[in-house]
Image 1 (cartoon, helix red, strand yellow):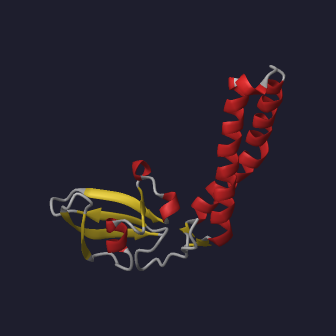
Image 2 (cartoon, one colour):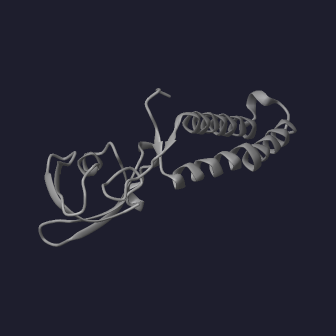
Image 3 (cartoon, one colour):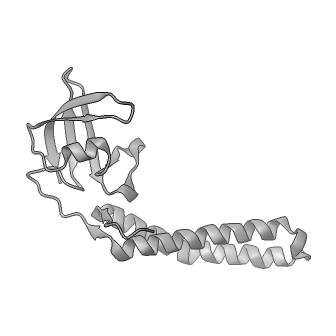
Amino acid sequence: MDTKEIILTREGREKLEQELEERTGARREEIIERLKEARGFGDLSENAEYDAAREEQARNESRINEIEQILAVARIADGDAMSVSIGSKVEIEDERGKRLTFQIVGTTQTDSLNHLISNESPAGKAMIGHVTGDRVSFTTPSGKVRQYTITNIEV
């Protein structure tokens, strides 16, 4: 993982901490039990259950390592109620009156299906530092220019 600064919302940090607890506790124990059971099937060189459990163990340990690295260097976003920052919930309106609401989050928390957009996305970059009433524009990855007015900011 690179040493680039990682910024998380308070909720994002809590979610990672919960995932880490689950992966180092119950999930790790479950995988160990599956490995013990698979060893009982005999020859490990042709044991598909054992191979699958080892692969799952490797994925789990890799994710544990990734979460630990993120938590070790991440800082909590300390939002400013007056301007858009990481952690802000932002409502914007286009020229036709269509409104969208989303939250600006750090790159590790991005989830467009749940309206969580990265501070490094074109929209996120355009919004950071602006206040209610500001008009912002950005170019989408497909090359379209979008213009919006910030109508509300919540921290």
